[in-house]
Structure formats: structure tokens, C-alpha cells
Length: 444
Ligand code: ADP
Picture 1 (tube, rainbow, N blue to C red):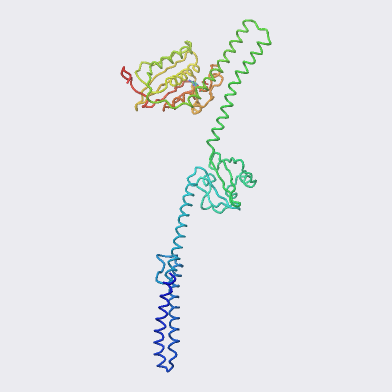
Picture 2: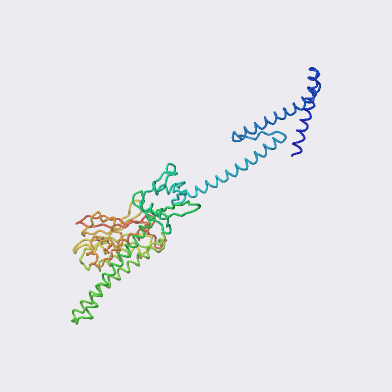
């Protein structure tokens, strides 16, 4: 390339020197000074080369200055090669930058898509970048708040002292600035004095944790009460000489407490099973009428003739689900009706087909009724409207949560309607896919 570049220039210089020499000679003859010809030839060659080089260098510089629009000014010789090499190096650099930009963009989009908040701080705790989730968690504007000191933007005193203390082993829990809720914040130092602030909405986790704590406390309380009574009786029996009649009475009371604990443990196991097992398939069909007959018998036994119990069981309907679970749901409702309705009251168990194809099993009583403010909480574990009546009649406070679980697993729901002083109606809604008219005798 050097030779190719050099030879044309040499040829050009030669041509110009000869042409300049000729012109110089002619001029020299005119002015009577012949030597001017040689000087004129060399001068013309130098000036022409200078001119050509200046022009080409100007074009190249202009192209560079104007951010390299189109191709570099090409041409033969050194300047053409130089322009080509510069253009190639620049294009290579541009491609590398574009590639890096794309990677950075993809990287930022990935962080943007994260369900957790990510916020970057420089060495002076100024925010240099944050994703939408972090902006949302701290109520920031990702553009407007850039380069602002984070402690001016997030003013929770606990956050400010956490950041200043520099001990980031444990995450910091903050009350979210968007209404009720809890944020977990952790800081990770990186690079030279830079810090990454990671945030996570842990409202649900905290709620589940507090529910678990409440549940354990409730279970312990429910079990401790009968155990305390039992241990009192045991002490009485072992320290006092009791008559046969007294002994029998104490044993009956001990029996009640034991039954209460057994009932509680059995309900807890039922709940645990419901939560841990797969949803019942929609292809296990069972007859509704015999199911209702069975719960009617249990209700009559529990009532001991103190209530008028009416059951509409002559329908030919099949339901899809798990028999033991549906049985448990209906008998929980009936046993509540019996336990809470005073003597002489009416209780009715009925079935109704709904217009869209589903159906509902209703348990209606003429008991004390339940004020509306309690309705949403009735299915909470251990929630009782009338605590002493519940315990006196062997209630565990878990019955309606079992019913709700069963219905949810069957794609249905539990509905409550009640009027204080008049009575209550609990309905189990079954979805259309789980209700059908009695199949022919071959069971298909
Ligand atoms: P429990 O074992 O205490 O009956 P449940 O979960 O079955 O627990 O019911 C929750 C609470 O709802 C009961 O403690 C009771 O106060 C109220 N309740 C349920 N069914 C009836 C009803 N038929 N009539 C009046 N109150 C009821």
C-alpha cells in the first residue's frame, strides 16, 4: 500500500515539475531570465501537492467533525487509505458501543422486570438509578429524583440510621409509604463506596407470619384451658377423699374436657388435611339424598328431640366431590344450628337448583341470629360470636373455617344471611360443573 501510495505521488510530482519547468522556461524567455524555469517547476509541484493535501485533509476533518455522515471521503493514495482506515476503526467502535448499549439496555430491562426494588447509590449516597418497583416502594420519581441524596428522598428515621450505621447483615423492616404494608430493605456495598439498595414488599409474608403466630397462640390457649381443668380434677381426686357419687361426677366432667380436646384435635387435623390434599376431581359423583339423610340422623341425635328438624331429601341430584368433605361441611352447619338454636326452635335443611345450573344446600334455623358485622369474620379460625355458648356446647371455633375450605376446594362458596333475633341461613353453593340430575341406573 505504501508503494502504491508513493508511486502516484512521485509521478504527479514529476509531471508537475516538468510542466512547471516548461511554463517557467517560457516565462523566463519572456522576462529574459531563463533559470526561473527550474525554480518555477519545483515551486509549482510543492504548491500543488500542498493544495491537494490541504483539500483532502479538510474534507476528512469535515467528515470527522460532522459525526461521520455516510462514507469517509475516499480517493487514491495515502489520504484515501487513511480515510478508509479511520472509517473502519470508527465503525468498529460504533458497533462495539451499540452492542454494549444493547446489553446494558437488556440488563436494565431485566432489573426493571424484577418484582423487587433495586436502587443504586454513588459514594455520596446520591441516587444514580432505580427501577420502577423501588420508585413505587419509596414513592420516588425515577427521573426527577436522580442525583438526589437518598436520605432527602426517603426520610424514615430508621432507614437513615440503618444506612449510616453501615451494618447490613439483617434486612430493615419499614412501614410502606403507600398505605398499610411492610417493606424489607437490604443494602449491599459494591465497587468503590457504591451501594445497592434492594427492597421487597413483605406485607403478605408478614401477614401470614402473624396469622401463624396467632394460630399457635389460639391452639395453645384452647388446649390449655381443658388441660388446666383436668389437672385440677386430678389433684382433687388424689388429695381429697371423695364419695362414690362425687367421684362419678368428677369423672363425667373430666370426660367432657377430654372430649373437648379430642374435638379440637380432630378439627385441626381435618383443616390440615384439607389444606394439604389436592383439589377433589369433578368426576367423582355421589348421590345427594342419602348424604342429607345421614346428616339428618346425626342432627336428630345431637338435638335429642329439642328441635323440629325438617329435611327435604327427596331429590334426585348428584354432586361431584369428596363425600367425607361434603358430609363434614353440611353436618358442621347442622350441628351449629342445633347448638345455637334454643329448645323448640325450627331447623330446615333443603336443596335448591340455581338457574345457571349450580345448586345450593341451605341450613336455616330460628336461632338467635348473627349481627352483620360478624359475618365476614365467621370463617376465621377460632372466631366466635358467642364464646361461652360455643364452648359449652363443645364448639371448637373451627367449624365454619372447615366449611369454607371444603367449599373452596369444590369451586363453590359459603354464604351467610342472618337476622338478629330471627335466625340464620347458611348456604353451600355448588358450581354447575359439579351438579347433575341423577344418572341412569348403570351409573354413567
Ligand atoms: P363453633 O365451634 O364455635 O360453633 P364455628 O366456626 O362453627 O365455631 O362458628 C363460629 C361462630 O359463629 C360460633 O362461635 C357462633 O358464635 C356463630 N354461629 C355459627 N353458626 C351459628 C348459628 N346457626 N346461629 C348463631 N350463631 C352461629
